[in-house]
Image (cartoon, rainbow, N blue to C red; front, side, top):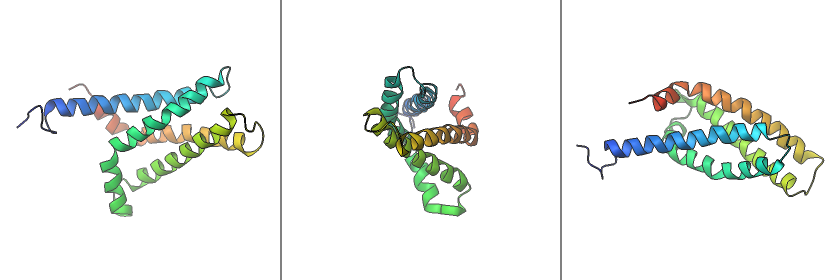
Length: 147
């Protein structure tokens, strides 16, 4: 039976769905904004969007915790293991990209390994993000479907 306090109630499911759409949309907009603003003219936008992506990524991971636990527990036997590996690589590269952005933003170094690593991981993140979206296209379609 669906009731307002029941986690499976229609209202609860709709709220979770809206939250998931909001978080995922914020992630997409954030990643694209990061890519578009990488060459300036205002690096402040690029820097702040990168910082703001950290809690959005955390919310995305929390929202998908059950999926992460399931695939991790099953390992290679899970049909979505390849997607989990893609997600892990994307997560690692995103973390490296954000961490290497701090020394650049704080002007600790404008030459050397920080900017090169930041640029390479940033480009790889964009590529992997689109691969992630492609691999999740059926989920995205279900989430976006009007009900």
